[in-house]
Amino acid sequence: MSVLKSFGTLPDGSTVWLAEIGRPGGLKVSIITYGGIIHSVMVPDKEGGSCDVILGKQTLENYLTDPSSSAAVIGRVANRIGGASFTLGGKTYGLLANDRGNCLHGGGGMYANKNFTVAGVTESSVKLAHFDNGEGGFPGEVDVTVTYSVTEDDELSIEYRAAATEDTPINLTNHVYFNLAGHGSGPIDEQELQIDAEFYTPANDAVLPTGEIAKVEGTPLDFRRLRAFGPAFAELDASGSPLGGFDHNFVLKGSGYRRVALARDPASGRYMETYTDLPGVQLYTANGLAERPGKDAAVYNKHGGFCLETQFFPDSINRPHFPEALLKKDSVFTSRTSYRFGTE
Image 1 (cartoon, one colour):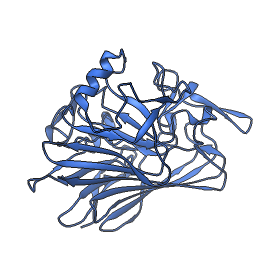
Image 2 (tube, rainbow, N blue to C red):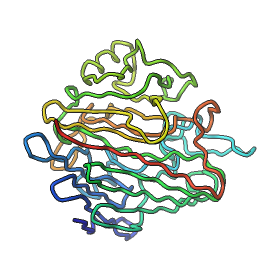
Image 3 (cartoon, rainbow, N blue to C red):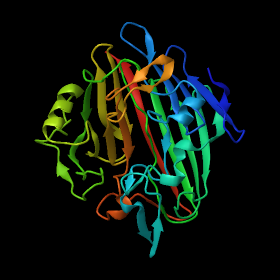
């Protein structure tokens, strides 16, 4: 069912393409080349209906003027780099400080506002490519490809590949916002989440890791068992957290490609399993959304969706005891994250 069509034109005159992939009777996904954004994911419910579970924008202009709730590829380094700088090979690299003195989501070279090239498309997959020439202050050049695939198991698979000309930090993810009741259905309070993590990385008020690795047991971050968001929000607020919701990195159990999380919406019967080969996941619950226009005339507000951003830990390049997020010169980085949908 692959379809490739124009989604609009950027100010520089380049075309943004939309690829529709999927399988008959199953998952249907649309991807746009701008930011490598997941534009929609149509998922069946227990009654045989189907709806879009991804927050997003109606038009290219909407994505350009208001990137909030965008399901874009994040890189060269997702999440935060402390002090917007790091030292590698005896040289200190300064980056754009775009978040409380830190560099967030790639700073001045962020992939979320780059127009990727279509490197291949089939009925069930699309491969996008981006050449990162070091914009934003990072060392060397990086060739990046991101491949989205829909499997017969109703799984949206995201495969990342990067090759570098110099040693460089690397941390690629997608900032996709899910709402399993439908993208415009309102707060996720009744939806449930479980994360396979016994530890998390505590952070300061700037959401930058302190370097500690702490137990989730006895804290509002204990998602080891399936738990509704509403009570979890209340417990977090009562703890004195200033974030207004979750924006935390969890230390995932195990290694290699494995299932790390389960989310479900009891009303529709939809559930989503998250699989990854990465060591961490950032749970973000759209704490900053407020009266933001979305697709299909929807209006998104606080806690209108949740993100499970698989990743290396934030600020890993400045924390030697964290899992190393470093791509060596002339080497290749690969990673895979998948979201598998079903009904019950």
